Length: 603
Image (cartoon, rainbow, N blue to C red; front, side, top):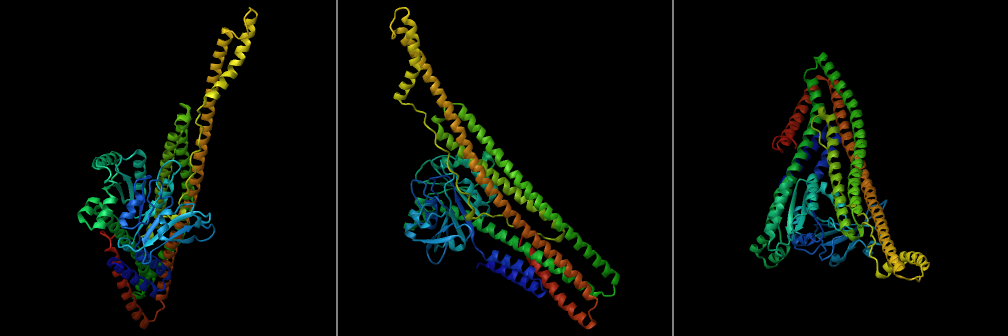
C-alpha cells in the first residue's frame, strides 16, 4: 500500500468509526465499499489496434516476457489479460452458461499455441486467457489487456473491444510505421476518445521503416485535422528487447519505451490517483453531512430546550423535508424508468438507421457493376463501415447513459453531495461475439466450354429457322445466311445469359449484405439491451441507497430532537459534551475530505 492509499484508508476508517458509534450501519457499508476501491491498486491498460501491427510483441517487450502470441498471422484471437502474481501461471477462462466461468490451467510454455478451438476448452466458449507473472511493472497495479485485432476480413472485433474501453484507465492504440493512419483507424480513435480520456497512439516497428518520422508527422497532421488531441509515441519492440538483453540505456532510450513510461506515469497513475481522491472526498463529505444532520438537530434541542415553538417549527420543517424527499423518490424512479425506455428506443433506432445507410450504399455499389469482380474489397469496406457504425452507436449510448445518471441525480441535489454511480461496466465476460463474415459470392467466371454451349443453344434456333427458309430458294440447310443468323442469335443469347448471371449475382450479393447487417443488428441489439438493463440496475441500486440514507438521516434528526426534550438536566450536559466532540470530529473529517481535491469539490 502506497502513502496516498494508506492516508485515504485511514481517513475512511475514522469516518466509519464515527458512523458506527452513532448506529449508522448503512453509512458504514458505504465507507467500506469506498475503502475497497482505494485498496484495489489495479489500473487497466487496454492495447488495441488493427491486425498485424505488433500489439502482442509490444506487450512482450514492455514486460520483457513472452506472454502473448506473436506471428505473421492473426495470433491474438482471444483477449489476453496479463497481471502480477508471485507464482507464474496461466488459465483459460471458459463460459459455462448459468454458472460461474470455468478456469483451466495452461502450461506457460504453451501460451503461443492457444486458440478459441483449444481442446482444453471442451467445445466451450473461450472468454479470455489470464496470464499471471511476477513483474516489477505489473507489481504497481497495472493490468495489461491484449485484444484481438480490430478490422480485417471476417474479423469484426471492434464492437467487443469498445466494450472494454469505458472501464479502462488508459488505452494504447497501436499502428505500425509502414503507413499513415487510415480513415477507419482515425474513426476508431475518435470512438476510443469518447469512452476513455487517457489515450496514446503507438507507432510501432520503427526499426523496420527508416521513414517512420515522416509517418509520425503525417499522423499528427491527420489527428490535427480531425481535432483529436492524442499523443503519438514511436516505439521499437525489437530495440527494447535488445536493450534489456544488453543493459544498454542508449538503445533503450532509442526504443521509445521511456516516453511510454512517462505517459503511463503522468496520464494513468496520476489521473487515477486524482480520481480516487475525488471519489473518496465526495463519499466522506456525503457521509459526514448525514451524520451532522442528526447530531446537529439533537444538539440544538439539548442546548435550548425552552424554545418549544422553535423546536416544533424545526420538526415540522424536517417532516416536510422528509415527505418531499419521499415524493422525489417516486419522481426519480419515474425519471429512471422513462429514461431507460427512451434510451433503449433511441439506441435501437440509431443503430438501425446507421446500418440501413451502410446497406443502401453497399447495394448502390452492387448495382453499379458486377459484384463478383470486387466482392472481397466490398466485404472489407462493408465490415469497416459496420464496425464504425456500431462503435459510434456504442459511444453515443455511453454518453446518453451518463446524461441519464446526471438527470436522475438532480432529484437529490437538495440532499447534499451526491456521487454519480460507476457506469464503466466493461467486462471481459461480456465481449460481443464476432459476427460471421460476409458470405462468399460466385466469381462469375465462365469457362470456354460453357460459353460454347450457351452460344450453341442460342444459335441452334437461328440456324434451323433460316436454314429451312433458304431451302425454298434451293439452298442447303447449312449455308452462309443460316450460319450468320446462328452466329448473331448465339451472340445475343450469350450476352443475355451473361446479363442474367450478373443480375442473379447482384440479387445474391444484396441478400448476403442484408443477412450480414441483420446478424450485426441482432447481436449488437442484444448487447445493447443487456447493457441497458445492467445500467438500470446500477442506477436504481445506487440512488435507492442514497434515498434511504437521506430519509434515515432526516428520521434520525426528528427522533433525536423529540427525545432531547425529555432528557434530564444531568444527562443533558453529558450528552451535549459527547455530541460536541463527535461534531468536531465530523467537521474535521469533512474539512480533510474537502482538502483532498484542489477546490474542495469532486470533479
